[in-house]
Structures are given as structure tokens and as C-alpha cells.
Image (tube, rainbow over all chains, first blue to last red; front, top):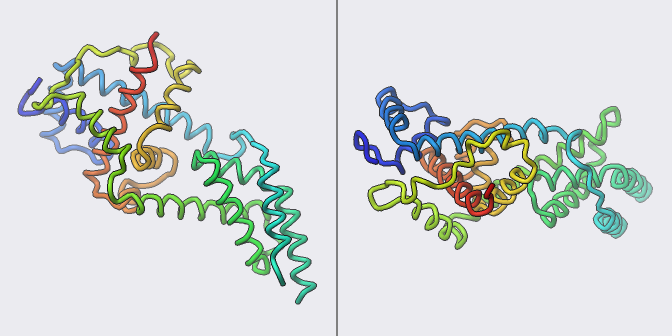
Length: 89
Length: 192
């Protein structure tokens, strides 16, 4: 689909652009019209949003240490202690 | 002098025993790379040892160690973004793959790909989130950094661009490509 001189490749790129730096009014309208007619691009927009949601959920979940799983690494501990021991005065 | 160093060693040794697992888990979570995480934690303790005399005994050693580690993580991302000036093989392959989603006119090659976005409660589906996480892990290195830094740090786009050494138009193009690549990967691995 190439509506108003807007290819699907460009339209889906503009979906991402709009999330970072708001599009100009004209571009917003162009994109809106394209998405209202092009099913495949509308699908991309939803999929993109779903991926964003995934990252946002994880951001909340993992942004503080209290929520991450503590993984033990005894080898690392041993290795660091050994290196400390080796430091010469 | 010797006595002081001996005492410092004792202090830092205690910290290693108390905090190394926590610091390691955090570094692993932030970098998704076991070797890198181990190196960063090791560097953190060595740096802590060097400047332990500056440590204010009234503050929490954990907080202090985490601030050293977080600076090392930021440095790591900065360095790895700079070292990838030329696109690597993985990036070229992924560019080819995402380009092939469209024809020469920029129209979708396959407008009827699967409709996974319409499934309900998809993000509560453990199997799906595992696939999505694996797909994110397979992205070319700087695409992943671009997309993750957008969410994981509360950073402005301009800061991320500076760190990745790219222009802002490159930035959303990179996010666009990363999302297309995730789309390809999900559609290959998720069939419900």
C-alpha cells in the first residue's frame, strides 16, 4: 500500500519515530490515514505496542534489586578473595 | 601502613562475602552476560579496595558498592557502543532479514502474517514471554542496547543517541529494525 506517498516501510518507521519525537501535524495525519486503511501496518503498530508493554512491565519488575533473583556465584567469590589476598602492600 | 592495608583487606573481604552475590546478580541482570558480569563485579571490589580509605563509615557499604558497580555498567555500555562503529555480521544479516519484509516499493511482502498481537493476555503467558526474551537476546548487540536503554534507564532519547554515537533518526530506525526483527523471530517461534 502506498497512500499519500507513504510506503508501509516508512509508515511503520514513523510509528516508532512518533514515540520518540512527536511527528509534525501533517505527518501525524498521513500516518493516521495510512493506519486506518492498511491492516498490515495497523497490525505492526499493535505488535510494536505489545513489545513496549513487555519492556515496561519488566522495567517495573526489575528496576529495583529487591525483585531480581539472587544468583549465587561461589567461584566468583573465591576468585575475588584470592585476588584481594594477592595484593601486595 | 602495612597494618592499615591488612585491615582494609579484612574489611573488603567481609564485603565480598556479604555482597558479591547481590552485585553479581544485578550485573548479570543488566548485561545478560555471565563473563561481563563477573568482570564488572571483580573490578568493583578492586576499585573499592583502592579507595576504601575514602569510604565514609557512616554510610552503607552496599550502597557504596552498588554505585561503583553502576558506574562500571554504564562504562561498559559506553565502550561497547563505541567499539561497534562498523556493523557486525549479525547486524548485516538482521538488516537483510528485516529488509526482506518489504518489497522494493516498501510494501509488506506478506501482509497476512500471523496475528499474535490479538491473543488475549499474551504478556501473562509464560511461554510467550520466554520466547520474546530469547528473541530480544538474539538481537544484534547495539539494536538491543538501543531498545533496552529506551526502557531500562530513565534516559532521554538524546542521551541514548550520544551514548550509542548515533543521530536521532538512526535511533528510531534502529528501534524500528529491532521491532521488525522481533516480529520475525516471534512469528518463527510462536505458533498458537
